[in-house]
Image (cartoon, rainbow, N blue to C red):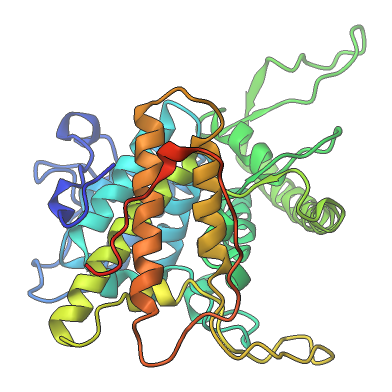
Amino acid sequence: MVSSGNRNAFAGPSSSSSSGTGPGASANGGRPAGPVRPTKLQVIPSTWEGTISAPIEEKDPAVFLHSMAQVLDEYHLPTKRHLHLLLFLTLTSDPPLAPLAIRTFSHLLSLLSPSALAPLLPSVTSHSAEDPDWFTWDEPPKGSIDRSVRRFMRRAIDSGVWALLAEYKVKGKEEDALVKVERELKLGAGAVKLESGKKGRGRPRASKTAVVQPEEEEEEEEQEEVEEEEDEEREGEREEAMGRKGEKFIGGKGWEVLGLFVEMWREDQREHLAKHPNESWSPLFLQQLPQPYVSRDRSVKTTLQMDDASLALKAIRAGLLFCAADDVESSEKRRVREICAGILRLVRDLSFRRRWLFSLIIPFTVSSGHLSLELPLHA
């Protein structure tokens, strides 16, 4: 867990793991040829964007992550598509890709200020919009991975980053769309797994792979569109049937990513206080709390008059219950308690604004004496 107040502690990918692996790698550390380094922040040039995107279109996420690490610096913002892809891989990848994804995301947070990243990150301040600005890409999705990223990020429109941290478990034979993409990613660039068939019918076994030929690409794209529509229908039916059942509010990777978000919100709070000495709170964290809005469903009358802190409090509750599961102390539990304390500080500091922010407080108790967060009333 990165200690509060030290953004330089974020560790970016090591040079040994990222040098010369991405397309367009060169003697300048792998950075594609581009314009002279600017003196102010700007979005990455379109020539770099294609270089970074190519590995994802070829289903090679490791090269995508290396390319991101090589290209980004304190002068260049990623595109919304690239940041959402990075967040998707950070929260859904398995080893050995997961550590690289988390390091790359952490490195990105260390390079750019929270206010610079704010327009690219999920927020819940635009409920009246069908697609809020942060969710809108400059170009349509390309391929199955992009479409799965869009489905994944859509969860955050109504609930912010909290919805991305959840762990969903599906019972039965139906395959989760995210699990399907993870399976595809493991196959490598340009390869697809053939359907398994019965012996004696001339169909290849499931362990075989085949390279997709150019003449098959058009047929494959049409099939992907059909599968995309079917996936969306199944996912909607599944979520409606599941409700809150089968969902873990914070998944395994979610705690590590939430720790990075908490540190970013604390840094945003420090930046905001430097500009406004009487306002010691984080605007970015406030954007993660549902606020008064006009529902997209016109038949629903919205009565909420103040911000709703229940999602943040549910995260704290999930952390304390995780720590109370047994009496065995561990570094993971200490890290989770630190994250919970950070969230509680952020909620507390928001309450010092001129009006009371929160209309819904969910009380909860955890029967373990060692779970005190030791949070002072004034800090």
